Length: 208
Image (cartoon, helix red, strand yellow):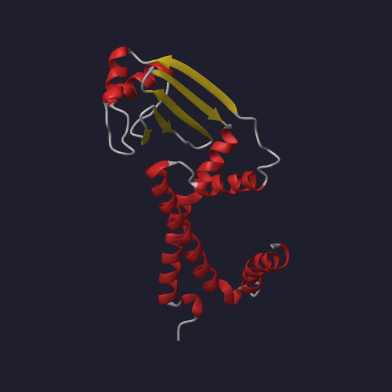
């Protein structure tokens, strides 16, 4: 009989698990570092909260553009016309894009939430007066919002899903590698058990 150390089947699975383990760790390495650091900053958000910086800008729409916006009867949530988007970018440094706008008879309001801050644009449809306000809460808040996936868009949402799958693969392959080495390492399962018991006990006793 082949010994466990020279079992071809065991060697194959161990090699395969190691391969997938290092591949998944390489894929999620930077993400795990980022999420570990932001986990600490989120846990201590009250102690490291920064003072928001608010920037306000005002401008008046050109007569032709004001007349165009005043005459429009758009569908609910329709974006600003391209001409208005270009004007907002040039006159107010406001990147509106295809964000949904709240249209009323008196004004147009565009909410522009973003990681680490907030912004909005308001246009008076009658007078043509436009006001843009940008709030920035700093880099810590920005990375905290990346951690939470707050106002980060579709591309970042896909990244979070892929990162989660890679991390799951990293953890599962690590568990199977532990299982295959556990025979020669008696402390394996007690340590793994501690990783389950400690958060469970803390949750039951100290979280109300």
